[in-house]
Length: 376
Image 1 (cartoon, rainbow, N blue to C red):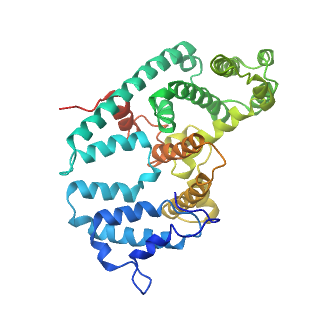
Image 2 (cartoon, helix red, strand yellow):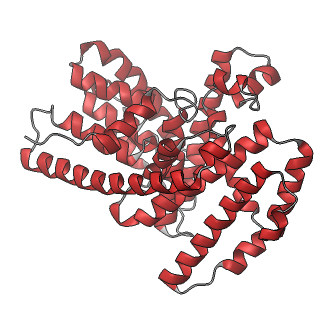
Image 3 (cartoon, rainbow, N blue to C red):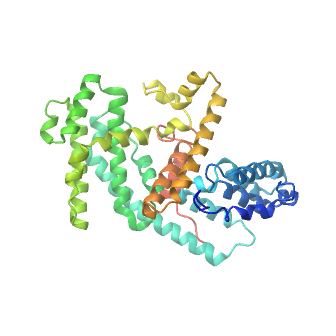
């Protein structure tokens, strides 16, 4: 990470070495693809107020675009991917597979390191495969797909959230619990957005605040199913924490009154607001997305609205960079928070990756879970 505003600007001074006396980046840099890529990628580690990194970004983008047609296919692919989504914004596990594919085409590759990378990738993939089998049994036994016909069946794509946030093999319990969490919240989100009446939803919210099994007696049957699944899941998590760590977290659940569940439901499934709309979602009665809201509020075109949203995302990343540079939280928490943002970027980059059954997310799931990397 670069320096915070309370530190000296010494780490930013390194960029001045690449400038001429007139304050511009030296012209010779514009012909070196590797250097331009590094400069471009470094510029995305910046925070608000770091003007030199904005200059570095503009300079590198301009020259990388001008060089694109002169590059070989492998280099051109790397440049195109970086200009579309800088590496720091990418999902680590997806990027690991992508880097292996790129590196094995590099004439300077180290064959031993390449083989080790492939072996590591396949071993971690086998852990993920075991987890998804376990989750499929859980999801089938839960029966929400058959009982709640209005809700989306997105087990695999919900698991993609978990891999995106924490992919290391030792965090298996974290991934399976997170997937269950998102699956249940997806059903609750659909209930709030497209199915439940206002009176019914007010009753459900009150029942969540009471957080007792007896609170669901007066709820409609479909809401009882959701409430029961949510209640059992929370009790399962509380039990696991007690067993594994000797901590009683149940009082904290009671104190929160379950409100965090509703909050995360809205947060996770609304991340698509930043990157696009889905016609299918609009047809099923879902709420308007941010692109639509921006068009109406500002009186601008869809293209202009998308550009504004992308700038908001870039601005938000600067804030994330600043916060992640602080030492107020454990690094593991910071990393998971950043990875959640990266996963949202990946899922909704080309529209709603959760609400569709084709496209980039399906391809990612295939390479992450189904297809191992061939080893010669």
